[in-house]
Image 1 (spheres, rainbow, N blue to C red):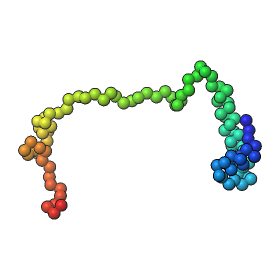
Image 2 (image 1 turned 180 degrees about the vertical axis):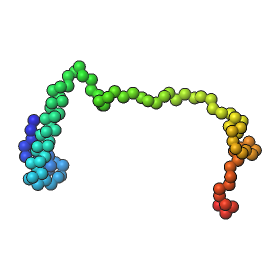
Image 3 (image 1 turned 90 degrees about the vertical axis):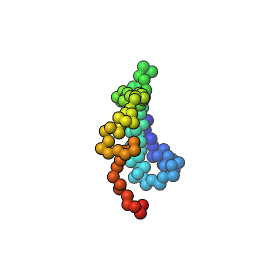
Length: 98
């Protein structure tokens, strides 16, 4: 299928685009090429071919979200470099005024 200059001018009018005559001629060739490619793909597509969204099959790479036991409070504090009153002890980073 090929388009004419009138077709492209009409499409440009519908899209509210102002095209010069040179641009219309360029788009006649480009859009006709696109339509020819779509028509060729349509000829190849048969009911036996399942439509896909990707050329390569994709699979989910995420694992199931399974709850597993973590460290207990005492186990976590055992690995802390410093602790006080059952909590992690960290150096003060803000001054008294803040």
